[in-house]
Length: 358
Image (tube, rainbow, N blue to C red; front, top):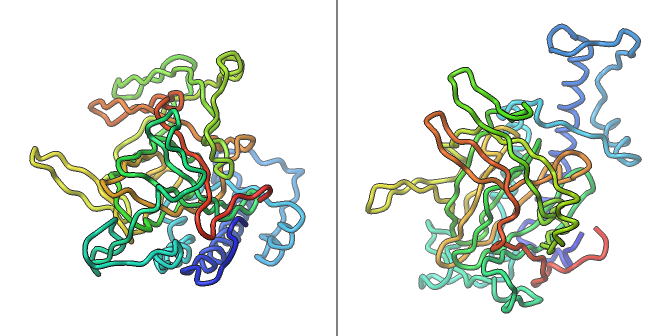
């Protein structure tokens, strides 16, 4: 854990406890699913080996004791969004109860100065993007988002806070086979969110039944989003970049028109925008809203994220950046390099300190 003190933490300890509880419930859910498929091989499209022993579903205590030795692997993509939504509800509730001002050691005001803390209560706070250390005033990138690491339990979940300066953005990216719960601590962000329809797996071109084509293209990925606990962008030499070039499939997606906690507004030209502001909570699932991007408002923003499970390249949960191309059937997301004008750099602020090991 990278939090120096839990005194007056605004409810962060409760979030950690809820994350532990929810992960254990996800383990039970996963175990039940696997046992159902093992005991009913004809109900799924996989073959069953008669030599495999049919083990009864493990209890939560058994799974918890196993996790002391080795964390069991979970596959959240096999569950429906509705099932996952019910399972993570306690964590969503805990995050909704956070006192963001206490967590970030800020003094709210009602004079309208700063970033919104609670619009209904008319509360505002000074943004903290220029108080994160080390300072990055002369960094090569003009779009820098800061990251405060809070906690990671290996292979289970990660908790951290993204600090957006005014107008800063995180480009379109995915969260493969993951659930992510996000609480806006202060400020507001413009959101673009997409539901995943399918991957394109053919070597060259995937042609849909209606004739839509979505070609696959190679992508060379930088390592900023590989593991969120090491959320520090690194420049990759071109020779190594080419050597480790990864081929990613395009994604066929549709716009997520009803993301949790998001409100829609229209500008003077009638163009609609999705906005999420403090103190709302939003969530994404393996298929629902799994690809998204953020652009902070004029006063910046802070967002606390819980990722279940964390990014892990060796578990095929690597983060990919995308470019969205719209067509009459939805969108085709093409993998791209990390945009050259974007960096996310870890830092320290208040109770959130750097850790040599976590």
